[in-house]
Image (tube, rainbow over all chains, first blue to last red; front, top):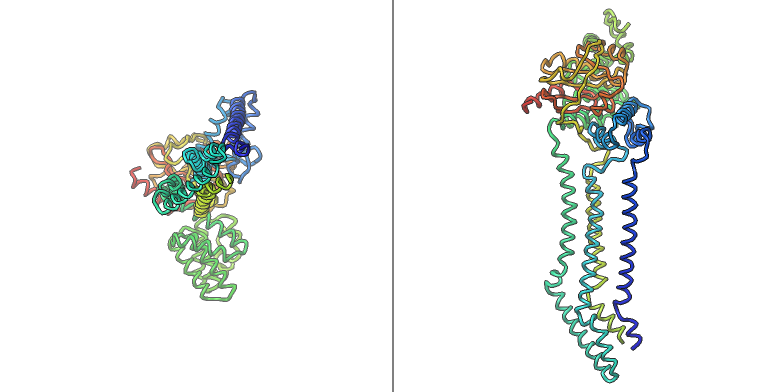
Length: 378
Length: 191
């Protein structure tokens, strides 16, 4: 009798849960008040100079990688600092100043940029997931509790037994009734497994799973469609920009002696744009260099073809002329052809450093051909 | 006796074990989805973000040209303008300068306006003279013009429509062909 009373289900746990709920509420309330106070009190009692420093520390130096304008001494950082100081003096708020910079550079100017390009979804997804799981758990918990309350198997078991056990003679009868009820419930359970009832009861779970799958699918779709929805003008500019950057990388790699990697990068550009004169020029020059190194005339021939194509496509590109001139002079011993290319190169007004790097070979070609050396080379 | 009954009753219910299994399955599904999302997402370094200024009014440019005249973007109103940020010390600027000069001389409907980026006026003037550039270039001693255009490093160019709206941003050296292509596209779209 006493044992059964002490196991009276629900009374003690509910009290504990209520207490825990109140404690949780209290903690959340304290945190919320703290955050609100911190937000409301920030900005007050701050001098202009402190504001300048704070903004400069929140904004990147435009030409640096991950360095704040405060910590950098580049021209870009000076420009940012000058702008921030001017705006603070003009009475602009921190957010107005930062928004103005963001309007020019985008969120990448911020040291801690907000998640973009699907990043918001990526950040929110775990919270959505947690909410769904909590919702499901809560639902199952509620359902179980409701079943316990309604279901005589659990909810009414103890009182029934209490009543039954009061009467010692009826104790066994009570137990037998419970056993009988359990058998019936077991039967119901087995039949329930074979019916749609179980599926029907689990609809929130399936709905939750469907929502998650749909959410992930939508996120992927959004990310993909963002890439595809670039306007043609922007896409063309970005392609040109990517090409330029890839070619630049290839040239750096070539200067470091990493010809294979450089050729791979140039090939990737030519796959997209087979008539890119700069890529053709450097592809041709690197192939020629490789052919010369391995004494492979086929490679030199391939290189020459690339260079000739580049010259035809962009006759005003000096690099193509000078490299083709080198091939004609050093590999084909075609002095006249080489001089034509070198003349075109010089007419294209190349940079002084480029002339300086190539002039010994060019002068040598002019001398062998018995022609006067152009004044730019002297 | 009652403990046993109660256990039996609990076991009959589809209770905690099943719920845990279901939640674990949902978590697993979520993790797989999340992994797919991460795996198919472009790395940040590969993401190209267009300038926020595109399709917006071009920030004002006014100042003194390298030959001492007053220059302003507003004076080109009603015409295409290619604003080019450059510096004499910048190697890619040397690569593109010839194309720019060719473009400015062969495209009368487009004005090129240079903006000096972190350079002295004399060096910038010498640079333009060496390539035979005959377009205007304005000095930007405090870098405020570059800042208003979101320029990080030269060369960087902006094609501005006759109505003063920025059509596109080109980061890195331009080529004659790509500039002509951009202007052609812009014209075909009614700008």
